[in-house]
Image (cartoon, rainbow over all chains, first blue to last red; front, side):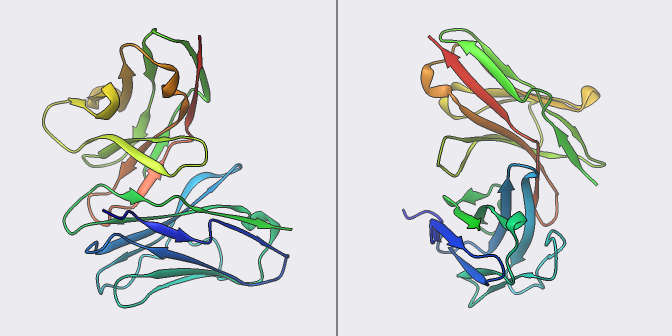
Length: 113
Length: 113
């Protein structure tokens, strides 16, 4: 079956611009996660959605970062006024109800110039 | 807060030799432990996981890991490696509730003929 998909696969943007990154989880998966993978910081948790509950935003590095999940499915991670330190690979993962394992997408590589 | 340490940033192993990757964690409760592999340009693939029960767990691609509570360790092993094992390996700990993962810094494995 189809896995987690993310778009775009690569994004180059100028410093100060806003960007939106999209994640399509596996159908039926109720939990969705965003992580960031950068050279300096490794793999970091950003935000977690579970069903209709309020998201866990504890990993978002600043108020320039936000995410939403519409209809319990697709999620968009938005970064406003991008900075060079935002350059990283942004990974999305999803998991089915009651499961502890996460299925990861291929990631979006963001480069801020 | 939980943390994961992978002491070895790089490991070089000869083809056919055994491989062991170290992972130490810090977590207040019973941990949910994972090993993921990331090949160049790819997302994260789950190799194996430990939640409870038998402390020696078997995973895909001939990998196994042993949970040692007394040492707070979850080391990954493979008895005989093929060149295809070359990749980056991440150990992670998950919370019982919420399931967000905390990753170690990763170990890059190089295989020499």
